[in-house]
Length: 122
Image (cartoon, rainbow, N blue to C red; front, top):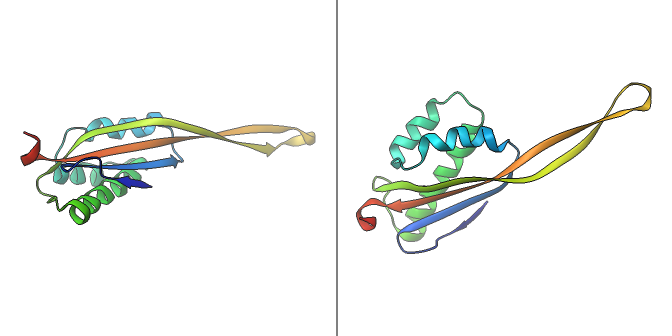
């Protein structure tokens, strides 16, 4: 995971090469875009998808990065920008009968989360 603050009021967290489909990650990302930090945690903890755990860890990391490096409070932060981009595809070969092989393609994605402070952004 790559973490860097881009300005005084926002924190950006980037996770690369996450082994999940872009479509499965976007299904969850669309639910949390523009919501407050506490509301996002409640939504992600109650979602029954496997991808929600990875995104929950990213949101925790962004909030910890914001409070430690910049001093933003978690109560006043909200998710301003979230995007999921496709990454490289991991290709493997699975041995089959009579010396043949089938290809297995595992998609990866890159997830970017930006947290902002409510009081400083308006």
